[in-house]
Image 1 (cartoon, rainbow, N blue to C red):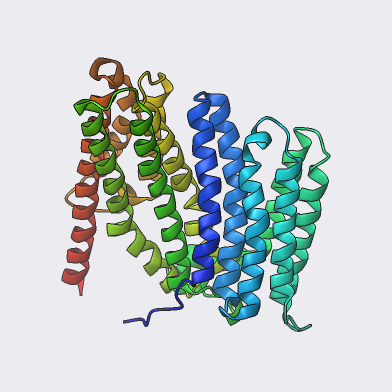
Image 2 (cartoon, rainbow, N blue to C red):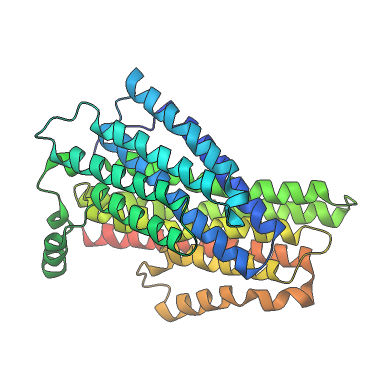
Length: 388
């Protein structure tokens, strides 16, 4: 049995609190403007913030010593991160100067953190330092660049920095496809390897932040209502059950699978990028739109899009966590596919049920999915025991 790796430090948890502010601002933006245009705006802003947070996750994983110098760097990065969170509202209307400059400042901090104590022979750290400097320059220039070209600069900057932090090894991927052996992905340079336990824990904690936003939006909508009726309180209970079931879907099965795969690959940056940095982005965003959808459903007069935000978010979450992609002899692939398709269509039932009853339907549906994913996970464990 593998020994646990490094643990998440206290200063990382503090930095996550700053990103909680950003997540909350994005959810509030979607609740205030429940339309498809703002869904795309929120997705774009979330994409940029997500990769900013990933930069800190990779830094702490490879070089985080939790000493005074590292703590100061993380705390320094939290300041522009907080400013960027507050600047989300004006950025959503096209006034991106403060938002873009804050993100540029974060990347300057990251460049300093990666370059700190980096010798000439430390090519990986020097490469990432240069990438962060380039990305910071692009974000700074974008502050005065008109749309849509500013967003192109953001995309290029993120592509440069993410490619340096989590470089993909195409030769290793070819060996994996040929040999079907995850150990083929292990990086030749030990310094490039990631600590699987720490990386899995970081992303798990971020998903918990987003799950917390589902609870916050549900509670806030219930408090803001004109009359606290029995129906409102029971709908709030349903929202809490929904959030708990979403937690179960990921942490009862998917979290362990992701950790094991990254362990078997020797902490491969290629696998970490595929499973976590890229692979967790959609389910994380799904939780954001679920939070907005549930919050809107508990309002006095929910808009029509609220039901679709909630059910489509749940469908994306189930797909993104890959819990239904696990092979299981007792649950056919066709049954799982039909269940996913049905999840995306649940919004059609909201007009007939009413908002509160619809929240109960969603809660019951996700509970059923959680039970199913647990059965599949236990079935895989039993099959593995039999094979051994």
